[in-house]
Image (cartoon, rainbow, N blue to C red):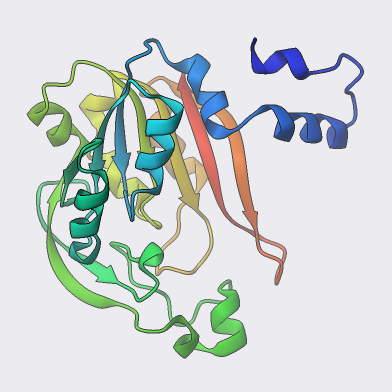
Amino acid sequence: MSSFDNVQPAVTSSEERNRTFDAAFTKDAIIRPLFTTTTPVILDIGAHKGESISRFASAFPDCKIISVEPNPELVGALTADYGDRATIIEKAVAACEGTIDLFVNEQTGTSSLLRVNEESRDSITIQDEGIAGLGAINKQIQVESTTIDAIARSHDLNSIELIKIDVQGAELDVLRGAARSLAITSVIEVEISFFDFWESSTTFRQIEEILHPAGFSLYSLPFVSQNPMNGRTDWVDAIYARR
């Protein structure tokens, strides 16, 4: 039975359509029909503490996961907890290979290749509590960097079903190092950060200037994070599918 079996023909208003959508679709339910195989190769760029490894292993039991995380404070536990389910690479994914600065924050989910913007007007915490409310931020360390193309080459990948990118504002750096790999990829799932929490932000136009020429178009926005303080959109999860 497909997810569409739950959709009623009388669903016409946007509110009804969205409620029906939320009941029928998760991100993985959206992505699954876009795959061309039941044994997908998934590149997990920005593993953090293994949340996405757990998600993919549950949704796609026969998948091969290559998961990349640059924060040395997280990699040990990540490997211990998920090393039997994914290939763990301790590097940052960027536009080129070498070394790169990583800015590590006490709230590890905000660590990035970009500094936290201490004058952010979109950060609710900074506006409410000041910069001290974030705890320790912008601890600068150097880490090894790689590219998606280098990962694909070193693992002899001939096809990639999904590249998931969650890198806290550094999406463009990741995509700039994936020119060859995009040609063998079916789906891109990318978190696009619009707000000013880091010292630079991203636009749809910048993302699509890379993905459109590579044969991708926007397929779905399954998650949108709205800012309750000022009404803007902070970030979205976007799914791009090969045309």
